[in-house]
Length: 162
View (cartoon, rainbow, N blue to C red):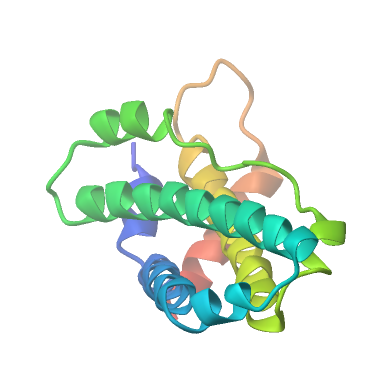
């Protein structure tokens, strides 16, 4: 039996996702500590409350996503067993609260763009996590093999290698 989770974690797709996630964390921290702090000081009270709430949600979301990325990177680097990573990953909230478009409309554009990018990253990580959790070909699930899913998996792996 071949486990494709390990291959997916060693793929260029995971490396790109990891880089994107860590870069977004750094960019967000720099914004909130610099330009964002100055922008929030000039906001009226109602907009300041939305800024505080949304920046807290953004920070929390990114912490959850970074935790997942770091766990998966540890597995890819051989520093953590897959079973341990799965147990730890179960503590991570990959869904979080829904977007609040009304509150986002009150925010400075740079913060809104960071929030949008964080939700896109969250979607990509959730897809990657689902792919890692999917049974591999030949795994005993008690069900008949899904031939179409197997072919889709082969296509995905071929594109990840390229």
